[in-house]
Image (cartoon, rainbow, N blue to C red; front, side, top):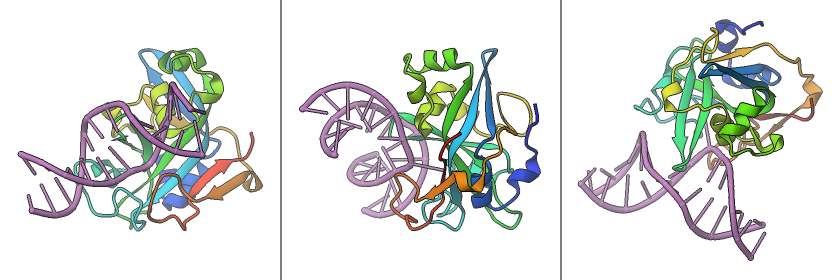
Length: 187
DNA sequence: CTGTTGATCTGCT
DNA sequence: GCAGATCAACAGT
């Protein structure tokens, strides 16, 4: 295993979002290992009106102002958690990359157990789905993903630039002109 | 203290 | 394709 170092996340949020595609996300929970290849991300930079941190620091978004390579988890629509990795340059106050989808690889049975035995194609194909599959909640805020532990990210597949599609982000009302959602066309 | 609003998912049509 | 679920955090009074 080859964990991605902290320096990777200390760069422009948008660049980190693009380059996280193909990386392996690992989750250790109750002694069980789960994980998959990151196939979809979105960048939320401090200077972007769609970013939770755009209007300043609050209790909820404080993690986005914390150390890079740590997690920011939030609860949305009364039902779902979404997980980000804090990423920004040294001169930026905040920023994060939303992990939107994985290709399930490890611990598929346990992920299905967490997701009412959904078929593999529906296991981790959305930001709320993958947190449910991996049992990620608010108590997982602030985890350092550059160290082996409950949640960490390692080098995986290298994705060719021509295999990456950039589109507007999903579910936002401002900043819809920015093509800051990145999707792997195929693995 | 109260009202509003989501970086979504599911099930039904 | 679309409405409903469902609640924590925020902004405004």
